Image 1 (spheres, rainbow, N blue to C red):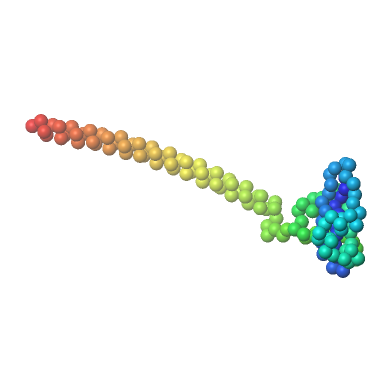
Image 2: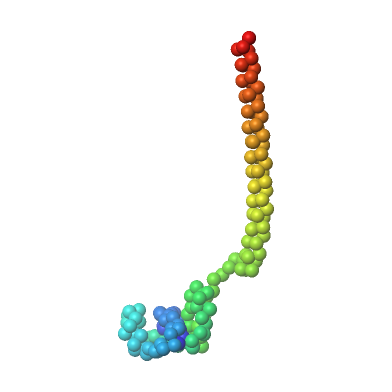
Amino acid sequence: MIGFKIYYEKPAGNVILTIPENHNSNATETTKEQDFAMFGVLQARDPETINLIQLPYGQYRSDFKIANSWKVDTKTGQVLFEYPKFETAISEQIHLLGEENEALKVENKDLKLALAESVEAQQQDKIENQLAIAELAELIATKEGL
């Protein structure tokens, strides 16, 4: 198993290439020369202007998943991650979404009740209309009989 490899510009620390971890237990590490031969982005550069950081397997795994970008501090050789900036903390967003969900459940229940009442009122109107039509038909029939 091989950890992340980060190729970066020596003067600025800008990352040129990040090679992901290799989870295979039989994976073979490649040399800087082999990587320069395999990756076009490295071939376009002077190897003397590029540095490499080979991280231990598993190191910074979650940071690489979450971060927007990363670069290398050229003085310390440390990887500097830039994380997403959230206007509202995730825990607060979850709390607000939970409250909104509860309010929507109540509104949905109220709408279902109002709909059921409306259907019931329409059924009652239908029955009353049918009775009125029957009475009207009876009146017409008795008038025609006279």
